[in-house]
Image (tube, rainbow, N blue to C red; front, side, top):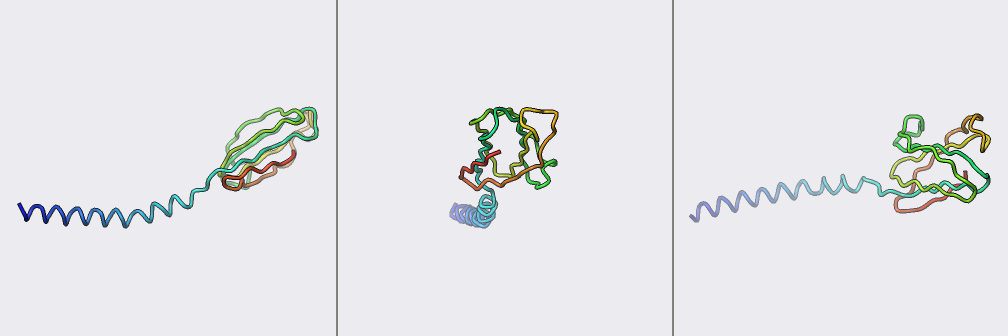
Length: 119
């Protein structure tokens, strides 16, 4: 019985050592994950304006996933929460969808922070 207890103790000690060795790697993986931040898109100038938003890892905004398109009225805001790059564009002529889109603008929200930008 003493032999079995000793063997189980050695096995448990080795298992705990192996687990301890893997924990720093897990902590490092977790530390590299960014907390999301919030980018608030604000219509401060126009009666109505359509805004197109994409979120992803690329600064080439066309490669990122679409969040959607919304029509904002003066004073209205659109909060986008992300730990990745947020890209947005608006109608070239607010209120005229046929005018096409402006060039993409982009920002990386700071972790746990709120940043507001005027369209």
